[in-house]
Image 1 (cartoon, rainbow, N blue to C red):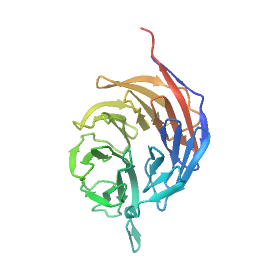
Image 2 (image 1 turned 90 degrees about the vertical axis):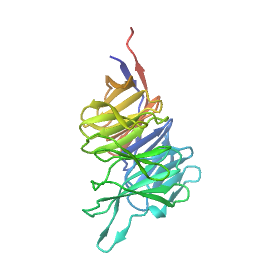
Image 3 (image 1 turned 135 degrees about the vertical axis):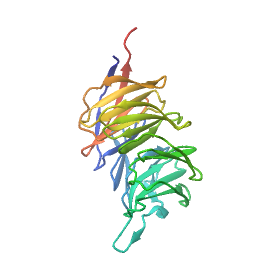
Image 4 (image 1 turned 30 degrees about the vertical axis):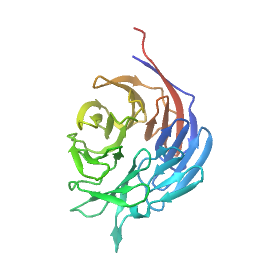
Amino acid sequence: MAAIRFGPWQVLAAEGGGTVALAGERLAACGQAHLVVWQGLLRLGAADAPWPAPGRPRFAGERVCWGPGVLDLARGTYAPLYAAEPELRPGGGERPCVHAWSAHGERLLVGYATGDAQAPARLVLFDGGRGEPLATLRHPAEFPPQAAWVGRTALVVGFGDPRAFAADTGAECACIALGAGTVTRLDADAAERRLLAVDLNRCVAWIDPHAWQLVDRWEGRWLDAAIAPDGRHAVALDLAGGLHLARLAAGRFEPLGAAAAPPFVATSVALDDTAIALAGGGLAARAGYVIKEPSA
């Protein structure tokens, strides 16, 4: 079994956030109302959303795409896309259920819980620069999704059977027969050759984002998971806050075992090629990691 070593951990204030993103030395933690960004022990900036902003931050150079807008780290300003504001009506209205940005902020996908039993979710694709709606995605009448991912040419929405759409037009490309209960995370490597979907408390699924087929399943009581940018390793966070790593090779997850106990019970995990980040309970943390393979 491979030896997994972390450390030292840098523990930071998440400022109420329980969702984490990582890009080298930089870490972002967010909740539905507030985002904070750190570089090492230096607090780089923060932002507040004008309405609920569920979803994961995404680093794009000197910007952090989060919720319905973009935080410019150099200027310290947060610019929301006001076209993405949920619709209101007398006595009620919509509530955002997920925001997902493309890698460089070109596209934003927003899912809204409508409160309408006949059409419980509305999905809209926006131009991330101009802020204009590009397409309303057609979908089956399912529960509002909790996870989405936007790539260069396609985007995926975490229904029980995840659905893929073209990133430019919103036209449906495929339906992936996962049969999930609740998809809580979608994550891909930098080259977008491997896509992971977390089926809460059941498995992490490996999906081929070109053939749109299920490649393998990593069974377990998983809460969250992430894939490294190089696509070689994945980390899964179990319901008790434990960390587990796996190698992705030859079309299979190869579990490498559990890692040493993290510094607190986390609810979210992010993975870089040489570092890992956690968030939960008002804290965030980052550490380097090394996977030492056993001698032949």
